[in-house]
Image (cartoon, rainbow, N blue to C red; front, side, top):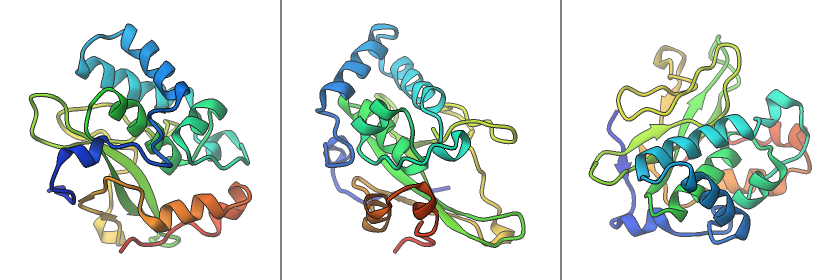
Length: 200
C-alpha cells in the first residue's frame, strides 16, 4: 500500500512529545544498551523492534490491567496495548535519529464486528527512501509479526472483505482520539470500552 507522509519534513518524525518522550533517561538508557549490541541503524532498528515486541507483553495477552501511554512508562512498567508499544518503539528509534511514524489499521472480529483502531509504526532507515511498516504488538498463537524491510510481516494483515482498513497516513504525533482514550481510561477494561472505532 502507498503510505502518505503527512508532514513536509522528516524532522517531524524525529521529534519528542508527551507520549514519545525519547529524551527521558530510561529511553536513553534502553537505547544505549540496545545500540551497544548492534552498532548500525538497521541492526538497531531490528533489535529495538524485537525488544518492544518480546520484552514488553501486550497487556491483553498478559492480563495486566494497567494502562500506559508514555513511552518511558511503557518501558518501566513493561506493559501496554498496541498504541503504547508503538510509542515505545517510536521513542527508541527516534532517539537514534531514525524517522518513525505512527500508523493505524481498522480491524475487527472474524465476522466483521467490533471494529477498533490498531496501532503500529513505519520506519525510514538511512539509504532507504521508503517507509516500512512494523508491528511490535507482540506475538501469540496465530500472530507472528516480524521486522522486515521487504514484504510486510504485520500482526494483522487487513481483510478488506470484512471492512478492515489500512489507514495510509503517516502520523508524526499521536492522533487525538488515540491519546484521549489512553489518558482517560482508569484501567484496561475501561479502555476496551472507549477504543477509537475510526480515525479522521
